[in-house]
Image (cartoon, rainbow, N blue to C red; front, side, top):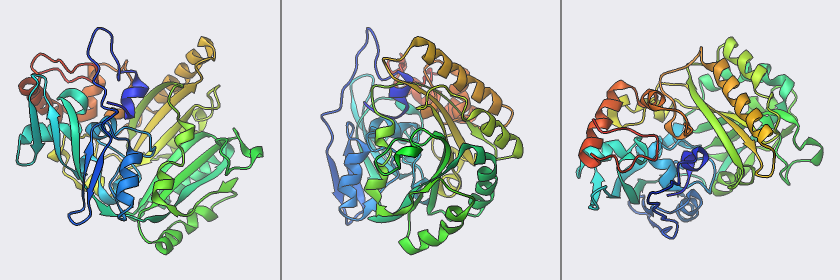
Length: 396
């Protein structure tokens, strides 16, 4: 199964074990009447967007189109639409699962409900999901979306504005703040390429005119380097940053949820966000709230719904670059996380955990109550812990 944190963390493959490759299984079947989609386990989110947007429909599916549905969804599934329509797991209606003993079961609210609960946030601990059924919602096909970039020196001022800007934001507005450099994309003037900058990426999942009104103050703030917000097809927005996070690069990341954007947090971000040596390294901050926070904490296995923000710090370097650079990027990631540790909210997004986290961090991702229930489900579904090359939840 491809996608999400599995590939970045290096736990999509294993030695002396069995790797199940679902990549040929990419079919997406849309029922526009019931507004549902049946998605095979090897599909990418670009496949889902292509088929659902033909009917003006969509579901929450990450921010990169070459992410795998089977990698993103079981860990929760954050994305541009989550504040309006919930996480990917909040839109999951059913799943076909191959269990550790080789049985094929269908999990839903009415069939194997404990397994279905665990699949909605518990990661790859419970079986191989060969098919997902999602609820769909009217989205687009044209949305108001794109990033605005400001110089890195403006980071503290931009974040203080952003703190107030999102406090009362409509559910339709999804934002991701990036700290790093301006990517060398064709739509960006060459003189800005690789310049240290803060960017606020936006997607307004409502009417275009309403989106333009909602984003007016953000676009007018300060002195942007470049403003790329415009009406565009939702599917185009979903793949707009694909080229900045290709397969094959070296990645090392850490993450935490934040309890808010205090002045101390803003100072820590401004002080560490641009200290990486590699121009490809970055940090991203996701805004929760909205529909994410309205789902009761125990309704799914996903933890940390109450957190207003999640941060991932991603060290990136090329395969032919030196081990010294890799070590420097790894050290930058850890130092950045250390600077944020005095300000955590409950939980951490399990898809953002790396391979070296350990059981304590996995437990933190879910909270004690959810983790205890997950361990009980694991004991029923996979008592020998066959599925353990993941952010593992040992059977109770």
